[in-house]
Length: 426
Image (cartoon, rainbow, N blue to C red):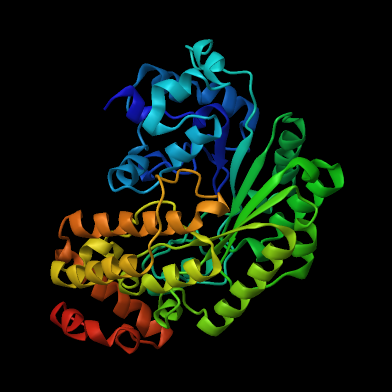
């Protein structure tokens, strides 16, 4: 791998604190880099960013492949805009003109003077995981991200203990984190995820303090909601920030969304989606659809692109789903995939959009080009991903276990897959 294809600017201005309070160097890093075991209880954010992340920065400068960066590499392989490309763009670097744009970047001096990886900077860009407090139990989710599915997994014997309590349940740690934000002179962007952010008390608490301190006037806040709840108090707080980036999490605008994102109701999801769109238009907020295509929803993915095209909102997923393995799109046998790709290619002929590759997917002026670019990345992925249909029996066993507790059936929502699932033991 060349320097141009492996270097990322993100470790110079970005970091993450995950649900249990462990630090991570990147919001996009793959599962191999989860849980650094350096926790906010024992180490300040400043210490972790300036000192513990030094080996990551040094490896980037040396052109080494960093453990955990495989997710971005996979996205770029299939033509999907990666986290690496987005972070490079923030410092004025475009991957298609890497050498020239890097030389003119205002950050080039920081890289040149930073050969040992140590920095005196503080993070300007955060991902803040607020714990797993959630009212949904999505079938592709995990206990670390949903308290509801954690309780269900414990009941069903899938896990033998609940995940650790979230760091943000401790008001002392929340105050420590807020103090770090106040001391960061160039702080620009905070992205919150849960659980469900709108029902997590720490989300409201942090927003309140930022507004009261005056930081909100120069800060952009991003967060993701599952479109099942509405909190007017949080919305009023959000109006005090310089910018808001809203991610509306939905798998498809088809009834199977209710099965996958159980126990959501599509009618409620659609209602809240339109309410958020109205608010965004009023306050000039940025809205994106966040989706995680799985074997159960990929055939209905075009409903997401239809909605996005109509309402001029971008479609973004953090990566191609890797875990749980039995939920991957590649578990779908090739004949089924061929039919889906055919429909996607037909959709593209009906929705022409010209333009160069869109790296800044938050630019509303190129949203239609971004949408077609995103769907092409899924076409490429679906066509080229290895055949993992041998995992179908694992999928069926898992779904049947959940259905016994939820009193539903995937065949109600996807009757066209009955023969496939019956053959795999359904």
